[in-house]
Image (cartoon, rainbow, N blue to C red; front, top):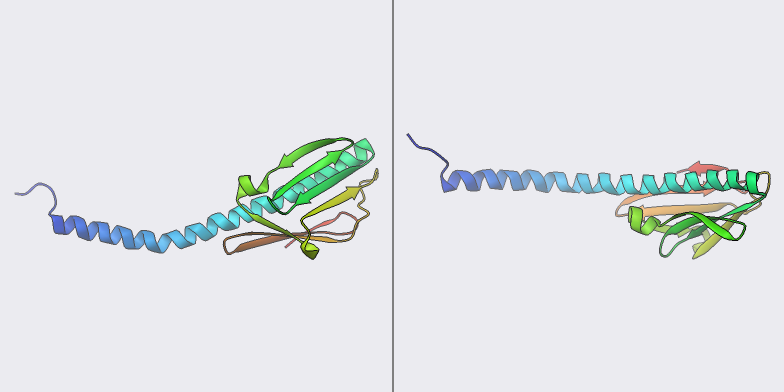
Length: 142
C-alpha cells in the first residue's frame, strides 16, 4: 500500500494544469481589457451627464478631455470637479477626433453644448470602445 504520488504523476498533473492555464489566460486578458474600456467609456458618459447637470445649476460648465495621459474632468466657474485619471484607473489609451491632445466641451445654462461633434476612442490591448458627443451634447456609445 503506497501513500502519495510518484514524480511522474506530479509532473503529468502540473503539465495538464499549465496547458489549461495557457488556454484560459488569453481569453481572461481580453475580458479584462474589454471591461476596462467599457468602464472608462461609462465614466466619460457619466461625466458628460454631470457636466450638463452642473451647467444647468451653475449657468455653465465645461467637460475637458486629455489624451496623454488619459484624463477627464469638469470645470465649473474657476474650479475643477470630478477629475477621473483614466490612464491610472482603467489603464486605457484615449484618442480624440482630429488627433487633438486636449478638447474642451462647453455646455450653456440650458445644458446644451455649442460644440462640434467630438469622437473619443478608448483602447486597451485589442479591446476598443468609443463615445461620440454630438454638437448639442448628446452621447452615442460605440
